[in-house]
Image 1 (cartoon, rainbow, N blue to C red):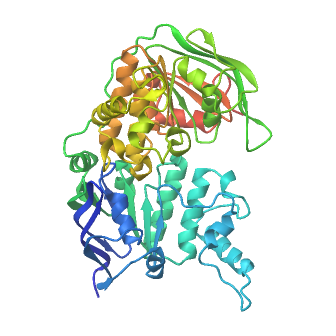
Image 2 (cartoon, rainbow, N blue to C red):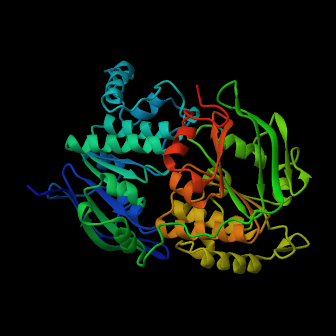
Image 3 (cartoon, rainbow, N blue to C red):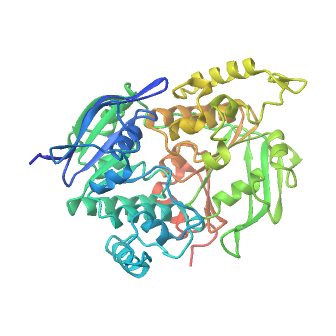
Length: 512
């Protein structure tokens, strides 16, 4: 009997213009949490997609319990007890939670009718056993991302999988949900399930993983025991150079008000109450104002109200002295607003367009890129090549890569490159480093601080407490759609910030 439940030996996987996995070997022991660490585009998701049968490798073999196996598709993987929670969830939005969980693994009676009662009972038992609370009758389109992730995990457990692959599972979760997930993963391992955990968050690896395998640019760098290493060493292995894990910046020099928000109220799509209630604040040139809060407390609706993605029911928004409250999204953008959106697929990119087309989405009408309505394609090519180089956007075929084919982190870098380069007085950045590795985070943080120092006003929304504390010059905390406190990062700490975020503390009065 082999000591490894899964072995991937000398795996090679190529795509047009790129070798995603170059002779990679990975060994997973029974009952261990094994982290797979690497930068965006290092080949982590590709390697796991090979194991899950989504891709066929050009070379190499996979063994389960010492026996060579052939995994032609995800059904083969499921039959071998391998399950996967993908970075971008594979759920059907108009189906209920229960229907999504049993889809493809339905039990039927002799006449072919669904045995839904039995399925419901099994899912309820799993959900109670692992503390994964979900509303089985809710439609997926109406539930939060944290909840969608629980649905994906239950989908795996419903199929009795023994080998669980988590692809960047914490990228979209709040700090509280991350703690819950880590506890769940430890519970799985204690029961003898084996977990492969793709991430580039070093704190999480140190907290739950037994061993770490590091990939860099498609190559295998090494495997280490977590107890024998530290965050700095891991980040050096992953990026290939020492990385500054702390944000370096000078004190802010705020000047004139760029954005002034007065009494903004935005209705909620999910319930009858307002998602944002009578919120007022201002952002000045030369400062980073950060909106902190637990996900779902009105941050999304506030930004949608500011950028024009949703209609505010009351309030006034002034940008560079101009009232933009009634303007369209394009007009607001032209009035001096760059927007790095929360949902990169829905609002950041046209996924079937090439990288270069996405780089000029707001600019293609500029005289630089068109003449008498005809696009100057060579100018667009030159421009996007420069941005790709400046921001280290990695893709198989450069400017002509279809955006959908890029890794999530590189899609994010492309959006950030485009929005910062537009050179507008206000940058609204929502979760700008979600899904990015330490090297890229260091770069983006540096860019945002450089923009601030050039006199830009930066409005940052982040769920990452380290990011809030490191980048913000001022912090406002949003709780249930209201501002409950304004804090100076130099005079507060993550614990106090957490109390405001959970509603346990309010400025002006202690929470009842």
